Image (cartoon, rainbow, N blue to C red; front, side, top):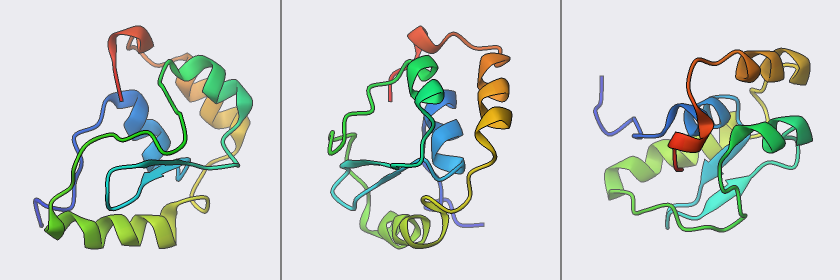
Length: 99
């Protein structure tokens, strides 16, 4: 395992990242998928402004971000009905997390 292959994200941001609905540029800018369902955006409770700076990444992390952008982003998401149901039954309060 490589400790640089991981990001400290809130549960909601991790939900979107794992499904390929968001990713990050090497400079920390948020990239939002055009395929993210409107219902998920409405209920997720995160600021998903395209290009929003979300922090800095170490140079070692950037190879993993490149992989995520090229392989996972906009390709790995589940059916929107399933993802929305999973989001709606999550046991955390979206207002208590920040991306």
